[in-house]
Length: 169
Length: 185
Image 1 (spheres, each protein chain N blue to C red):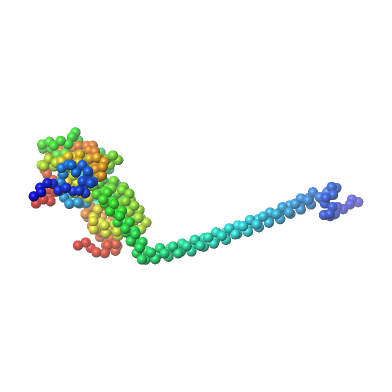
Image 2 (image 1 turned 90 degrees about the vertical axis):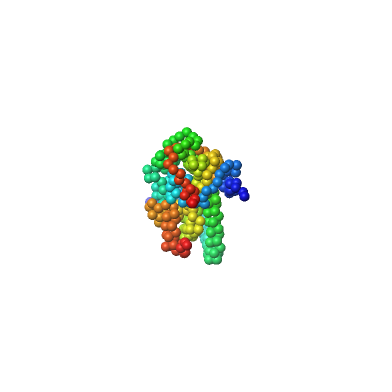
Protein backbone atom coordinates (compact mmCIF):
# COMPACT_ATOMS: atom_id res chain seq x y z
CA UNK A 1 0.00 0.00 0.00
CA UNK A 2 1.32 3.41 -0.94
CA UNK A 3 1.64 5.52 2.21
CA UNK A 4 3.62 8.37 0.67
CA UNK A 5 2.01 11.81 1.01
CA UNK A 6 -0.52 12.71 -1.65
CA UNK A 7 0.95 15.12 -4.18
CA UNK A 8 -1.11 17.98 -5.55
CA UNK A 9 0.25 18.80 -9.02
CA UNK A 10 -1.86 21.93 -9.37
CA UNK A 11 -0.69 23.24 -6.01
CA UNK A 12 2.89 22.41 -6.87
CA UNK A 13 2.59 24.37 -10.12
CA UNK A 14 1.51 27.42 -8.13
CA UNK A 15 4.10 26.90 -5.38
CA UNK A 16 7.05 25.27 -7.17
CA UNK A 17 9.11 24.69 -4.01
CA UNK A 18 6.47 22.28 -2.74
CA UNK A 19 7.60 19.78 -5.42
CA UNK A 20 10.68 19.01 -3.37
CA UNK A 21 9.30 19.78 0.06
CA UNK A 22 7.21 18.08 2.67
CA UNK A 23 3.60 19.17 2.79
CA UNK A 24 0.10 17.80 2.95
CA UNK A 25 -3.32 19.25 2.20
CA UNK A 26 -5.62 19.13 5.19
CA UNK A 27 -8.91 20.57 4.00
CA UNK A 28 -11.06 21.15 0.96
CA UNK A 29 -10.83 24.54 -0.73
CA UNK A 30 -12.86 27.05 1.24
CA UNK A 31 -13.62 30.76 0.67
CA UNK A 32 -15.05 31.40 4.15
CA UNK A 33 -11.82 32.17 5.99
CA UNK A 34 -8.26 33.09 5.21
CA UNK A 35 -4.77 32.74 6.64
CA UNK A 36 -5.25 35.44 9.29
CA UNK A 37 -8.44 33.73 10.43
CA UNK A 38 -6.60 30.41 10.68
CA UNK A 39 -3.76 32.00 12.61
CA UNK A 40 -6.06 33.63 15.18
CA UNK A 41 -8.31 30.54 15.38
CA UNK A 42 -11.49 32.15 14.01
CA UNK A 43 -12.72 29.97 11.17
CA UNK A 44 -16.08 31.72 10.78
CA UNK A 45 -14.72 34.97 9.45
CA UNK A 46 -12.61 36.13 6.58
CA UNK A 47 -10.21 38.59 8.18
CA UNK A 48 -9.73 41.44 5.75
CA UNK A 49 -9.51 45.20 6.07
CA UNK A 50 -11.90 46.72 3.52
CA UNK A 51 -11.75 50.46 4.26
CA UNK A 52 -14.42 53.13 4.13
CA UNK A 53 -17.70 52.30 2.40
CA UNK A 54 -16.55 48.76 2.83
CA UNK A 55 -18.12 45.72 1.24
CA UNK A 56 -19.72 43.64 3.97
CA UNK A 57 -18.91 40.01 4.69
CA UNK A 58 -15.39 40.60 6.00
CA UNK A 59 -14.05 41.10 9.48
CA UNK A 60 -11.23 43.32 10.66
CA UNK A 61 -10.69 44.59 14.20
CA UNK A 62 -12.32 48.03 14.34
CA UNK A 63 -9.31 49.78 15.87
CA UNK A 64 -6.82 48.52 13.29
CA UNK A 65 -6.56 51.09 10.54
CA UNK A 66 -5.53 49.25 7.34
CA UNK A 67 -3.96 46.06 6.00
CA UNK A 68 -0.33 47.14 6.13
CA UNK A 69 2.32 44.97 7.77
CA UNK A 70 2.13 47.18 10.87
CA UNK A 71 -1.62 46.57 11.05
CA UNK A 72 -1.21 42.80 10.73
CA UNK A 73 1.32 42.99 13.58
CA UNK A 74 -1.26 44.95 15.59
CA UNK A 75 -3.88 42.28 14.92
CA UNK A 76 -1.61 39.60 16.31
CA UNK A 77 -0.65 41.82 19.27
CA UNK A 78 -4.36 41.95 20.08
CA UNK A 79 -4.19 38.16 20.26
CA UNK A 80 -1.29 38.07 22.67
CA UNK A 81 1.60 37.80 20.22
CA UNK A 82 4.81 39.79 20.48
CA UNK A 83 7.62 40.25 17.99
CA UNK A 84 10.43 37.70 18.02
CA UNK A 85 13.54 37.03 15.99
CA UNK A 86 13.00 33.68 14.29
CA UNK A 87 10.64 30.86 13.47
CA UNK A 88 12.37 28.16 15.46
CA UNK A 89 10.11 25.75 17.31
CA UNK A 90 10.31 26.26 21.09
CA UNK A 91 8.57 24.32 23.84
CA UNK A 92 5.42 25.98 25.17
CA UNK A 93 5.52 28.70 22.52
CA UNK A 94 3.63 29.10 19.25
CA UNK A 95 4.69 31.48 16.50
CA UNK A 96 3.36 33.11 13.39
CA UNK A 97 5.36 34.25 10.35
CA UNK A 98 4.12 37.11 8.18
CA UNK A 99 5.04 37.28 4.49
CA UNK A 100 5.33 40.44 2.38
CA UNK A 101 5.70 40.43 -1.41
CA UNK A 102 7.91 42.59 -3.63
CA UNK A 103 5.03 45.04 -4.19
CA UNK A 104 4.74 45.64 -0.46
CA UNK A 105 1.47 43.75 -0.01
CA UNK A 106 1.18 41.80 3.21
CA UNK A 107 0.37 38.50 1.58
CA UNK A 108 0.25 35.63 4.04
CA UNK A 109 0.68 34.42 7.57
CA UNK A 110 1.65 30.89 8.56
CA UNK A 111 1.27 29.51 12.07
CA UNK A 112 3.22 26.85 13.90
CA UNK A 113 1.38 23.66 14.72
CA UNK A 114 3.71 22.76 17.55
CA UNK A 115 2.08 19.40 18.22
CA UNK A 116 3.31 18.06 14.88
CA UNK A 117 6.27 20.43 14.51
CA UNK A 118 5.17 21.90 11.19
CA UNK A 119 3.74 25.12 9.86
CA UNK A 120 0.04 25.48 9.03
CA UNK A 121 -1.28 27.72 6.28
CA UNK A 122 -4.64 28.52 4.76
CA UNK A 123 -3.71 29.22 1.16
CA UNK A 124 -5.30 32.37 -0.12
CA UNK A 125 -8.93 33.32 -0.39
CA UNK A 126 -10.07 29.96 -1.63
CA UNK A 127 -7.31 27.46 -1.23
CA UNK A 128 -6.67 24.44 0.93
CA UNK A 129 -5.31 24.35 4.44
CA UNK A 130 -1.91 22.75 4.26
CA UNK A 131 0.79 21.84 6.73
CA UNK A 132 4.32 22.33 5.48
CA UNK A 133 7.76 21.53 6.75
CA UNK A 134 9.25 24.98 6.34
CA UNK A 135 8.35 28.59 5.63
CA UNK A 136 10.62 28.62 2.59
CA UNK A 137 8.27 26.30 0.71
CA UNK A 138 5.81 29.18 0.23
CA UNK A 139 8.42 31.94 -0.11
CA UNK A 140 9.63 33.55 -3.32
CA UNK A 141 8.17 35.43 -6.25
CA UNK A 142 7.36 32.57 -8.64
CA UNK A 143 3.77 31.50 -9.34
CA UNK A 144 1.62 32.23 -6.31
CA UNK A 145 4.50 32.40 -3.85
CA UNK A 146 4.09 34.92 -1.06
CA UNK A 147 7.35 36.86 -1.10
CA UNK A 148 9.51 36.77 2.02
CA UNK A 149 8.87 36.36 5.70
CA UNK A 150 9.40 39.80 7.22
CA UNK A 151 8.11 39.31 10.75
CA UNK A 152 7.96 36.58 13.36
CA UNK A 153 5.72 36.82 16.40
CA UNK A 154 5.23 34.47 19.33
CA UNK A 155 2.96 33.85 22.26
CA UNK A 156 2.54 31.27 24.95
CA UNK A 157 0.96 28.09 23.56
CA UNK A 158 -2.76 28.23 24.32
CA UNK A 159 -3.91 24.92 22.92
CA UNK A 160 -4.11 23.48 19.46
CA UNK A 161 -6.83 24.97 17.27
CA UNK A 162 -6.86 24.44 13.53
CA UNK A 163 -9.76 23.96 11.11
CA UNK A 164 -8.36 20.65 9.93
CA UNK A 165 -8.15 19.47 13.52
CA UNK A 166 -11.83 20.29 14.11
CA UNK A 167 -12.83 18.47 10.97
CA UNK A 168 -11.26 15.21 12.09
CA UNK A 169 -13.34 12.79 14.16
CA UNK B 1 -22.03 134.55 -63.27
CA UNK B 2 -19.99 131.49 -62.72
CA UNK B 3 -20.42 128.53 -65.03
CA UNK B 4 -22.44 125.62 -63.71
CA UNK B 5 -20.43 122.47 -63.56
CA UNK B 6 -22.46 119.69 -65.04
CA UNK B 7 -21.77 116.02 -64.73
CA UNK B 8 -20.58 114.53 -68.00
CA UNK B 9 -18.94 111.12 -67.90
CA UNK B 10 -17.28 111.76 -71.20
CA UNK B 11 -15.36 114.56 -69.68
CA UNK B 12 -14.16 112.63 -66.73
CA UNK B 13 -10.65 112.16 -68.04
CA UNK B 14 -10.11 115.80 -68.65
CA UNK B 15 -7.51 116.98 -66.24
CA UNK B 16 -9.28 120.16 -65.65
CA UNK B 17 -12.50 118.41 -64.62
CA UNK B 18 -12.83 118.81 -60.85
CA UNK B 19 -15.49 116.09 -60.68
CA UNK B 20 -13.08 113.47 -61.98
CA UNK B 21 -11.66 112.40 -58.66
CA UNK B 22 -14.90 111.55 -56.85
CA UNK B 23 -16.50 110.14 -59.98
CA UNK B 24 -13.51 107.93 -60.57
CA UNK B 25 -13.59 106.85 -56.97
CA UNK B 26 -17.30 106.14 -57.20
CA UNK B 27 -16.87 103.99 -60.31
CA UNK B 28 -13.98 102.14 -58.78
CA UNK B 29 -15.90 101.57 -55.56
CA UNK B 30 -18.85 100.31 -57.54
CA UNK B 31 -16.60 97.94 -59.46
CA UNK B 32 -14.97 96.78 -56.25
CA UNK B 33 -18.33 96.23 -54.61
CA UNK B 34 -19.55 94.33 -57.65
CA UNK B 35 -16.43 92.19 -57.59
CA UNK B 36 -16.85 91.58 -53.88
CA UNK B 37 -20.50 90.62 -54.38
CA UNK B 38 -19.54 88.27 -57.19
CA UNK B 39 -16.78 86.75 -55.05
CA UNK B 40 -19.16 86.41 -52.11
CA UNK B 41 -21.74 84.78 -54.37
CA UNK B 42 -19.09 82.40 -55.65
CA UNK B 43 -17.96 81.49 -52.13
CA UNK B 44 -21.57 81.09 -51.05
CA UNK B 45 -22.19 78.76 -53.95
CA UNK B 46 -19.10 76.74 -53.05
CA UNK B 47 -20.15 76.62 -49.44
CA UNK B 48 -23.63 75.49 -50.43
CA UNK B 49 -22.09 72.75 -52.50
CA UNK B 50 -19.97 71.66 -49.55
CA UNK B 51 -22.98 71.76 -47.23
CA UNK B 52 -24.93 69.68 -49.72
CA UNK B 53 -22.06 67.18 -49.93
CA UNK B 54 -21.73 66.97 -46.14
CA UNK B 55 -25.49 66.63 -45.78
CA UNK B 56 -25.49 63.82 -48.28
CA UNK B 57 -22.58 62.14 -46.49
CA UNK B 58 -24.38 62.50 -43.16
CA UNK B 59 -27.52 61.03 -44.67
CA UNK B 60 -25.58 58.03 -45.93
CA UNK B 61 -23.86 57.63 -42.54
CA UNK B 62 -27.25 57.80 -40.85
CA UNK B 63 -28.59 55.11 -43.16
CA UNK B 64 -25.50 52.99 -42.48
CA UNK B 65 -25.89 53.48 -38.70
CA UNK B 66 -29.53 52.45 -38.94
CA UNK B 67 -28.52 49.39 -40.90
CA UNK B 68 -25.87 48.50 -38.31
CA UNK B 69 -28.35 49.09 -35.51
CA UNK B 70 -30.85 46.81 -37.19
CA UNK B 71 -28.16 44.17 -37.65
CA UNK B 72 -27.08 44.53 -34.00
CA UNK B 73 -30.70 44.29 -32.86
CA UNK B 74 -31.11 41.15 -34.92
CA UNK B 75 -27.88 39.77 -33.42
CA UNK B 76 -28.99 40.57 -29.86
CA UNK B 77 -32.40 39.09 -30.52
CA UNK B 78 -30.78 35.98 -31.85
CA UNK B 79 -28.79 35.68 -28.60
CA UNK B 80 -25.47 35.83 -30.43
CA UNK B 81 -24.29 38.97 -28.61
CA UNK B 82 -25.42 37.61 -25.26
CA UNK B 83 -23.51 34.43 -25.88
CA UNK B 84 -20.38 36.40 -26.75
CA UNK B 85 -20.69 38.55 -23.64
CA UNK B 86 -21.33 35.57 -21.42
CA UNK B 87 -18.34 33.77 -22.90
CA UNK B 88 -16.17 36.81 -22.23
CA UNK B 89 -17.44 36.99 -18.66
CA UNK B 90 -16.80 33.28 -18.03
CA UNK B 91 -13.27 33.52 -19.39
CA UNK B 92 -12.45 36.53 -17.23
CA UNK B 93 -14.01 34.91 -14.16
CA UNK B 94 -12.10 31.69 -14.74
CA UNK B 95 -8.86 33.61 -15.20
CA UNK B 96 -9.39 35.57 -11.99
CA UNK B 97 -10.30 32.47 -9.99
CA UNK B 98 -7.28 30.60 -11.26
CA UNK B 99 -4.78 33.40 -10.84
CA UNK B 100 -5.91 34.64 -7.42
CA UNK B 101 -6.97 31.41 -5.75
CA UNK B 102 -4.01 31.60 -3.38
CA UNK B 103 -4.15 35.35 -2.81
CA UNK B 104 -5.13 35.97 0.81
CA UNK B 105 -5.36 39.74 0.55
CA UNK B 106 -8.69 40.62 -1.11
CA UNK B 107 -7.51 44.15 -1.77
CA UNK B 108 -4.74 42.66 -3.90
CA UNK B 109 -7.00 40.07 -5.56
CA UNK B 110 -9.54 42.65 -6.73
CA UNK B 111 -6.83 44.68 -8.43
CA UNK B 112 -6.38 41.80 -10.89
CA UNK B 113 -7.15 43.08 -14.44
CA UNK B 114 -9.77 40.39 -15.07
CA UNK B 115 -11.71 41.37 -11.94
CA UNK B 116 -11.50 45.05 -12.86
CA UNK B 117 -12.68 44.25 -16.39
CA UNK B 118 -15.70 42.40 -15.01
CA UNK B 119 -16.53 45.43 -12.85
CA UNK B 120 -16.19 47.62 -15.94
CA UNK B 121 -18.51 45.37 -17.95
CA UNK B 122 -20.95 45.38 -15.05
CA UNK B 123 -21.09 49.15 -14.89
CA UNK B 124 -21.98 49.31 -18.58
CA UNK B 125 -24.33 46.31 -18.63
CA UNK B 126 -25.45 45.76 -15.03
CA UNK B 127 -28.62 43.86 -15.92
CA UNK B 128 -26.53 41.36 -17.88
CA UNK B 129 -23.43 41.00 -15.68
CA UNK B 130 -25.05 41.06 -12.21
CA UNK B 131 -27.07 37.86 -12.87
CA UNK B 132 -23.90 36.14 -14.13
CA UNK B 133 -22.01 37.20 -11.00
CA UNK B 134 -24.82 35.95 -8.80
CA UNK B 135 -24.91 32.61 -10.64
CA UNK B 136 -21.16 32.33 -10.15
CA UNK B 137 -21.54 33.20 -6.48
CA UNK B 138 -24.25 30.60 -6.09
CA UNK B 139 -22.57 27.77 -7.95
CA UNK B 140 -18.95 28.33 -7.07
CA UNK B 141 -18.73 30.77 -4.14
CA UNK B 142 -15.78 33.11 -4.37
CA UNK B 143 -15.11 36.71 -3.52
CA UNK B 144 -17.47 38.44 -5.95
CA UNK B 145 -19.00 40.60 -3.22
CA UNK B 146 -16.79 43.57 -3.99
CA UNK B 147 -17.68 43.46 -7.69
CA UNK B 148 -21.40 43.25 -6.92
CA UNK B 149 -21.11 46.12 -4.45
CA UNK B 150 -19.13 48.23 -6.94
CA UNK B 151 -21.54 47.61 -9.81
CA UNK B 152 -24.85 47.94 -8.00
CA UNK B 153 -23.78 50.44 -5.31
CA UNK B 154 -25.87 48.31 -2.97
CA UNK B 155 -24.92 45.97 -0.17
CA UNK B 156 -27.76 43.79 1.08
CA UNK B 157 -25.52 41.97 3.59
CA UNK B 158 -26.11 42.73 7.27
CA UNK B 159 -23.57 45.09 8.84
CA UNK B 160 -21.62 42.44 10.77
CA UNK B 161 -22.20 39.49 8.47
CA UNK B 162 -19.49 36.98 7.74
CA UNK B 163 -18.69 35.79 4.24
CA UNK B 164 -21.28 33.01 4.19
CA UNK B 165 -24.04 35.28 5.49
CA UNK B 166 -23.11 37.99 3.01
CA UNK B 167 -23.23 35.51 0.12
CA UNK B 168 -26.67 34.34 1.22
CA UNK B 169 -27.87 37.95 1.50
CA UNK B 170 -26.67 38.70 -2.03
CA UNK B 171 -28.33 35.56 -3.41
CA UNK B 172 -31.62 36.50 -1.74
CA UNK B 173 -31.23 40.02 -3.11
CA UNK B 174 -30.76 38.53 -6.57
CA UNK B 175 -33.80 36.28 -6.22
CA UNK B 176 -35.99 39.15 -5.06
CA UNK B 177 -35.06 41.03 -8.23
CA UNK B 178 -35.51 38.08 -10.53
CA UNK B 179 -31.79 37.74 -11.28
CA UNK B 180 -31.79 34.23 -9.81
CA UNK B 181 -34.83 32.12 -10.32
CA UNK B 182 -34.30 29.08 -8.18
CA UNK B 183 -33.45 28.81 -4.52
CA UNK B 184 -30.47 26.73 -3.57
CA UNK B 185 -31.20 23.23 -2.44
